[in-house]
Image 1 (cartoon, rainbow, N blue to C red):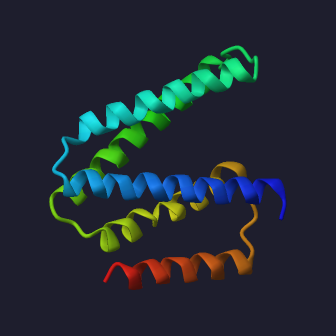
Image 2 (image 1 turned 135 degrees about the vertical axis):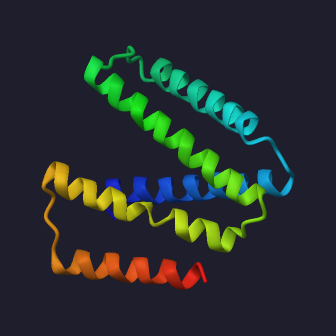
Length: 138
């Protein structure tokens, strides 16, 4: 298995666990913004430690700073919406598959922005993935 795939699998487990913990917070009637703030502080500390251990200065062009800011806002909206859905009694087995349809947005944006090739096997795979999410969400 190549390195990008291994790292993607690590990301899969990390995001999967984070999503599960959002459900735990919802079941425990946690105020979502407080949970998000704590989660974000830990992410920030982790990023600072990575800079220190890798001996790499903070560097981001103004354009990429703007992209990161928009990404942060999109993430905040997504996390808040998901956590609120779970807190209001949404079942994780329904909410998480619906949220996972975000892969369609990422694939479409990658196609339009970066002109990544869309092969028949990718379309079939995406179709099967979307189909499975629809079935899971019922």
